[in-house]
Length: 509
Image (cartoon, rainbow, N blue to C red; front, side):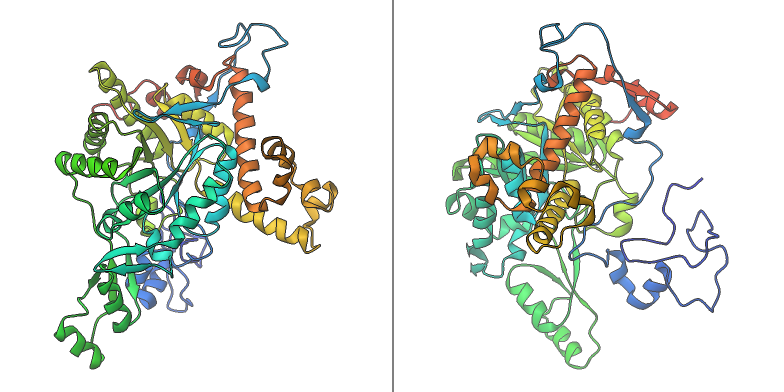
């Protein structure tokens, strides 16, 4: 049995011509010279190195296509019929409506959240409604790395950003609806730091929280993007980006004029943090005015995971989001998205065991968030339960963006009088069709009637996840989400049983 996808992919719209596949290679079992050329190999023969990356980005989201041999579906959720925790044991008060989903985190400056979710780093597609909906739902959200590259009005002097209006707009999308829960965070990578993004974000635009990125792109490596011509390459170089080959090199310019120059590429920088440089960087951020510090980590080697956790404890970092294999939405090589990193449930196992060890040593780990492939309340409940009290929340990135996009689109259709058939039975107006608008009015008053339907969509989606979580918690007679643990999980496979017993990755971490 193979776990890897065949050489057909939504990343590139590649398709195997035959239904007969050689499992190990992913190629058609017979390959003929009469083929029109639709698989990944054929595409590479034409488009070359570009096909390392997804070719279907733009107005789309991208996610892993690998069906891993173990994930949260290998567990069912337990249920109980006696007693109650954190609620009076009577039938009138032990209802789903009395399950407490609120939580808080933060070492120096605590942050409250209305729901145990965050919306991880993103700055593409309908980001305005993504951030606004997070504020409405009362959860933390993160502006993604390299946001400066999306701002056509960005201004720089001597390699430092002096005007970054898009960042002000992104922060305002959240602040406009902030109701005391959650926080909007700016993620910065090494290139952002070199361009002065943290300083201008904090000192000019009032950002209060910075997330430090370990690795680059979607999770692991620095992004590489083709540049169309010498003029563009020179402009990228002037803005402080790494460009290969160097467009300022006279020999490269001569080769370009003679039409024998290879393709130009921009290349993001990989971080080379140490305990000392990170400590200084965090101190600098706090001196600038940052109230909260976050880390973003992926399923790197367990030795690196432990090192990051120890640094976080020492530096009083507020939260680390661990991003496991199985998720997506970032700009990462296609095969890296499928074949790199610990699957989320395995990554969570490593993180939980390390946090337990650190607590035994007398250290205080930061709040832990797991993300990577979560989209429904059963998955979220399992992720929280598997966290054994160490995992505060679950990141819902692609699913929340899907809600932002579809909410906006359906709202536009309603206003145009072109109501999708499946929603006509509910009515003809936004008020009639968007069912949880009533809950928003309860929070914001009648001005909620004028909210963007994309943001309403994000709020409604997260509201649904929260309501579903309450059902599972009440099913286990736990009326505070902080009580969920691994006793709430039923292993269905030998791999799941090994994970619960801490045996599957024994010896690592």
